[in-house]
Image (cartoon, rainbow, N blue to C red; front, side, top):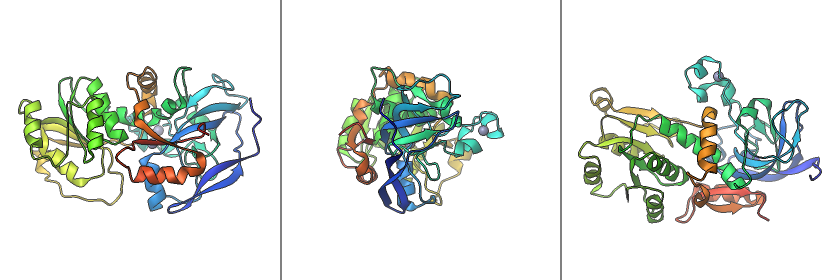
Length: 356
Ligand SMILES: [Zn+2]
Ligand SMILES: [Zn+2]
């Protein structure tokens, strides 16, 4: 095992759209903590929003879809070894508070505190060479099997958020679901719903992504402005309407379209509308009279982690094809810029410190 240096490179958020490569101390760990050498960290839209809109204070080191190798263990840590390849999980609920007893884990106060850091205000730290994993986050650390890559390990967190969203839906095999937006998250929804035996109508404005959606199990993939979309829904749902719709793109008209296309008693799940203060008119009678549910799902659920690990590492949900671009740590700002403005051939973008 390599000697751990005193200093490391980290990409520090210094203000709106200001990411700087800096030399910072390697974090020190306590008796119940781990030090992990980061291999891969995914670029997540929630971090992009914080970087571009300055919604949180600086300085911080972002990056929370992290996989790497344990290089140091606190004296009281059990169950892990030096050299273990692991995937990390940065938000862990306390499991005992009022919110947790109602399974609203993302509303738990402990959950909201990030337990993985590369220094400064904890914010994930994956855009650095080393991260400190605090004791509260140990229950979310998953070992990566020998056959699987760090890239696959870094995908556990996004897959977890998607599985959590799917579990919010009261859908049954054979049901018809619309997934609006076929970026990496939308494609994961499409794939997971198809695996569960649902008929998926995928929408996106990019032809390349419609093609990918078909490859990922969509029954039909069309543009959201296709004139025959309502007819298609009627045909595939035997004139019942959609059983559910997932909005994996922050576009208000997609919500309104979905509310119109789901059947009475159906569900519309918001997954990408994370910006505060965005408002949009809704015909409330669709909720009250037609009993259509408008739901949201945010972030991950650590209790799903074993199922997520099985899905990804068995490759039943093969995530390898979703990662299209890998950037070295020094080019994290470019990785964020590309993820913020996707191109026809770009999907999941990661910072990969193993690619030299
Ligand atoms: Zn994420
Ligand atoms: Zn709690």
